[in-house]
Length: 454
Length: 100
Image (cartoon, rainbow over all chains, first blue to last red; front, side, top):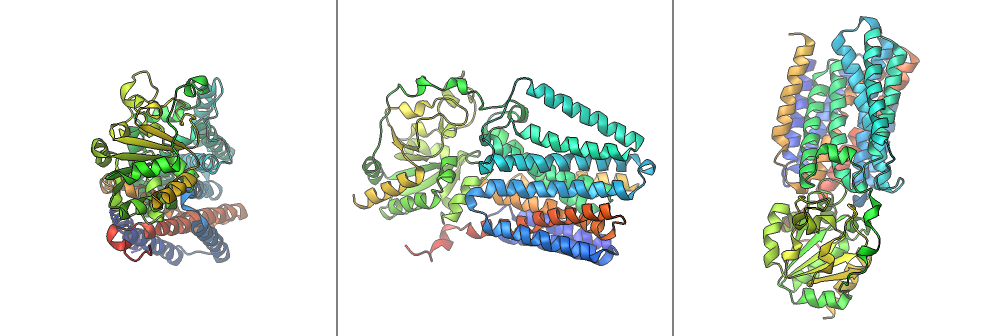
């Protein structure tokens, strides 16, 4: 009977995820999944013969208060680090569930499958925990966003990884309790050392992958305690995270291995003089207003700079002003713009931009040749034509938004500094490009008021 | 079938369901999808409740308690923040009431 009730929860998760896939049904989908979770919690409390009610109640209350507080307080611009943090908590919870089996059980008598499940759950859960919090630190600006690399790093990480596997096998075979704890500790270290060398702009991949891991850790915990809802819920999330991971790496034209291990974007040697000595056309708010005011169609390309400057409302005000003048406005959103999949969409939704106005790469790209003005707000590598034209470029082959095919381009950017990939952007020096050097929010606001007085 | 074989069967089938259900989600919804899925991975809470509620030794109860706290943060925070995000997603038709 209990199994049938749990099945209802699993069905709610599947229906919920399915509905999360459409803009009109998404909110109800999330609520259906949440109801499924509530049902699973009630079934567990009612049927498992809980003895330590005070411990359980205290845990639920503390967790609910902290979770709700974080969910209510977080700013939309900080959503990537929020999701990373929640991910990390889910991962460590699974590792803790598996580890209670070590204490309560007799380790030598366990079935091989249970031993493997315990170890897998502890390892993946722990890696997810520290990995997510390193990602959190990088996104929150507590840790430097650039990759932290040193010579021989991959060898050191590789040796620690092999050591973990050997230690896990030894602990499992001999049934040594201390070995399990050391495995957990080493896994925590591995979470740290594997995310530290990955740069900020690769976080969409990292967060997707850690999301997948938190699901796999839950599944492994499900094998430990022989619980189908855990296995099902975990497998669904594992699959979802993996799909997004590969969509992100595809959007960068890089392999998962390259994102995780190459220390991409750490090479500062390409910087220096070559960026500053070519002439660029500088724009004033009035120049921007004139260019936009006489356009018929405008495409806005947002990037991480929009999130940093919290300029989502300012960009919508500019768009409103243009639409009132009868100008068509769309937003072109590259899959890896921002710091997590869909980051820009959430920010623009917060600013009340209707989702029909948001175009993805495939929808937006054919429109550039007939677009009069493109406004780039805090994006760089995703509009770099050398990804298309220059086989020697490190980002060659990455699908880009071909903004250089539009009538004219306005780039709102704080300085001429190169983007994350550390490479120059020929777009900035083109004949029909104007550079507006300013904070994105101030630039957009001043352009909007210049447009009003036009 | 042994519990292990049943478990593996369930896992593989669920993973395929996951791939099928999620592969066609538009990019606009990727962030809420991820945070909603993330909340679902908090299903580990039912293992945490059992561990905290049945733990025989003080250490087991402490670990169980921590598992309940972290899993609840994941579940409550994850679903709430997803709801907050999805509340903002509006189509052109829903936008009329805004003062401008």
